[in-house]
Image 1 (cartoon, rainbow, N blue to C red):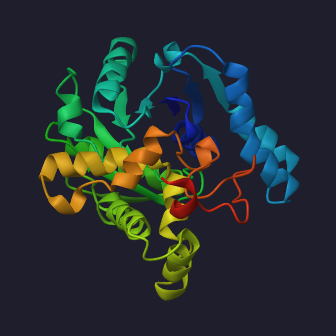
Image 2 (cartoon, rainbow, N blue to C red):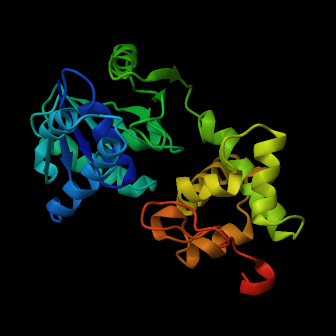
Length: 296
């Protein structure tokens, strides 16, 4: 099967790797800007090279995975059987990109959107064919879950096809009736938002909140570090979608979350969020923000 992933950010790169690691898939990573292909190639290879260095995969396996991926512009989706849009979490951006894809792709191509909270029905209203939500989780090459979200025009055949594809690439599909935030983010992102509120109120430090949830709730990662991993801009976008869709005050974004996004302190991707990060994305010890010092 030929797969095109349109959008070359963190999620697009991860989804590309997830398919390239599986048997029977040729993958085209479509860079929407139409430039910077060498840079995207290096970013795609970076986590795989790390696996080689750690002995998790062989050089031969690295070469095999890389050989299955072509990086080009949006025209690379023309002959794809499955096209996964992975643009930023903005409904207008996704609509516009999918309109472009629809004008290029085969008539029988399966169109999917990797959205973490937006309405599949609303996105598909701008198109002449149905789409389906295929929500991967970061890091997409590793995380097992794929939320499969049908919109009102999605056919049952599309749902079953996406479930089968998810299983084929060693993921676990969970079908979710369309609703703001779906399942995981409906539960997860408000928890991160509440942790930000607790910190903003001065009830505990960043490290204290994260340690409390790791040791008290047996979470592998604290909520503030997790927010940094997801991207604080993504967390804010999801909270805003859920608040707008429900008008429920429990989904109102924390003020500090808004401030940090405005300051471009987005977490790992920007090198600074609730913690600071080195070039490998590791937390630099002793760098957690302190509102008493920064005046955030």
